[in-house]
Length: 444
Ligand SMILES: Nc1ncnc2c1ncn2[C@@H]1O[C@H](COP(=O)(O)OP(=O)(O)OP(=O)(O)O)[C@@H](O)[C@H]1O
Image 1 (cartoon, rainbow, N blue to C red):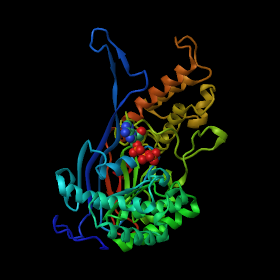
Image 2: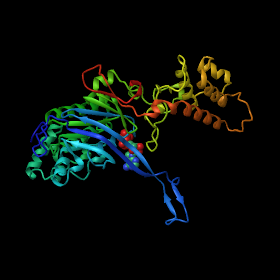
Image 3: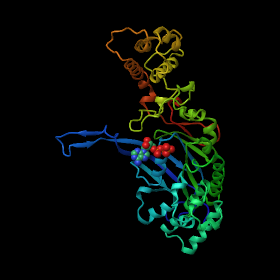
Image 4: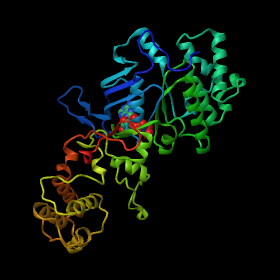
């Protein structure tokens, strides 16, 4: 069997150019909104019950290229759209919008035999080797199954290739007749690897392939994957939430947040010179579920917003510690930073009610921002202060905090460029000469 990325006479691909290119790839899911919340009863309609559907913007306008032989790491918190992107690239999911070019050909234009051929060129391995291996099938059958589906080789040839691959992934060819339950997690992932490689693919999407394994086993499996990549000329899109795994295996890294790629750079550049506040936060801390608990404060505060209604502009802005000052106010030195900190504290309700003067001292060193910004801050302080004047018609304390939050967000956060424009900037790399993309207005 061949090793190295093959010349592809039918597609005219020469093995040198970009292997995979995504242009504006988007995947939305329609889902029912909540259990009963979305059900509406209208007797004048037939049927009288309708169900509200909402759109989950799982992957939104992603463009990137993957070069032959490289590993592009894709990292981000759970639910940010990594798996959806991986599956959409392989067309296991139909993209809602955008184009995917593989070896220069638009996958949407392929049909019949061409599509079949491309399908065998692009494989996927999943996180959970336990559930992705059929317990009733022997290891040999598992590895040979994709070859059968693609009419590759005869029975004897398949058996020989399966045994050869078992050896290549670090298992004993005599395991050919065993059932998967006899193997450890790491060994099962190696069987998966042999199965994916059986049809001689050029491109493999690896979706959290080692996250279910013990840390000590992870490095061994990753090393095997690197050796196989070299020998078989494979290109990987490697999905993981664990930065140390990404660091081990990647050549370049794409950081994903709420359906967008927010930063993309060569590995060293990304780890040594991260330029997006989200990447920095990921590198500096692990998310803290509840920052108020035992005083621990993660850099990544708050919850990831819903992909049904993601923030406008930069999607990270609602959690961003570097939100940019709205330019319609006249800010003095440090005034925006103090206002931003106060806005975050009110939004998360991280301080106990106290008199207005104490709030002014605690957050503003006693002196409020000048001009209109100062008046807005003052109004917000009056809403949450313990000594606020009674008789404003609002009884519930929670309502006061909500009103203050709304006032601050509307007056400041929503007017920042971060809320108004989607950022995308190409930066000069400090390490290496690869491209460095950062989707953050701080790089305007
Ligand atoms: N079939 C589906 N129908 C509706 N929503 C979906 C579907 N698949 C994924 N989603 C939603 O799309 C978003 C992205 O999910 P995805 O699994 O791609 O994220 P992920 O980064 O891979 O997370 P994880 O690491 O937890 O798998 C999530 O909000 C998820 O709930």
